Image (cartoon, rainbow, N blue to C red; front, side, top):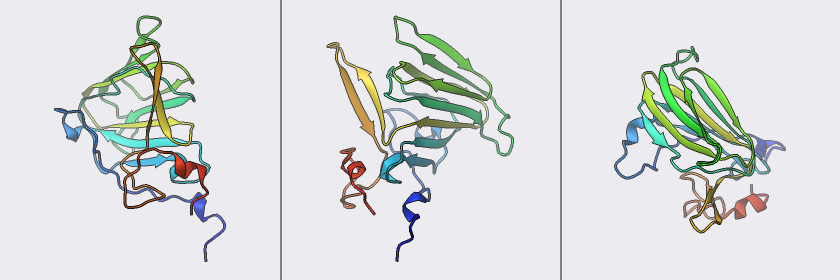
Length: 185
């Protein structure tokens, strides 16, 4: 017999970094990592968040993009329990390149709010002297980014991690978003 609120409780599975650009060092992040991937894990959720510990420099999110909702980026020391034991140089750009882009250097515990529609990135963990706890959170049912195309248009890309499909466990999630439309159990 199922419990009334069972769908509201999610236990984090271990996730391992499977996406690394050709030639990049896959050891930039400790594994396993933890992610909460929104409505594909708790129906109706409008929240996506990742929990990662960076241990080596890494250039991530190289292409400026934006989101339809606010995004929050958290940078803390990863030597628990002292979250203020921070030893890194991280470079992050907010704004549209060639228009209003500003580069920020993060060298202490920081949170950044990126309002909906504001361009941001690249994000470059240039130097990591001690582990860094990184958390990116967006307030939507599945993670996506909007990129400008060379022809003046836009392309919206969805990402849901290396998960099995909720509707067909024999295949990997391809971000079709059909599971978000259903009240799956």
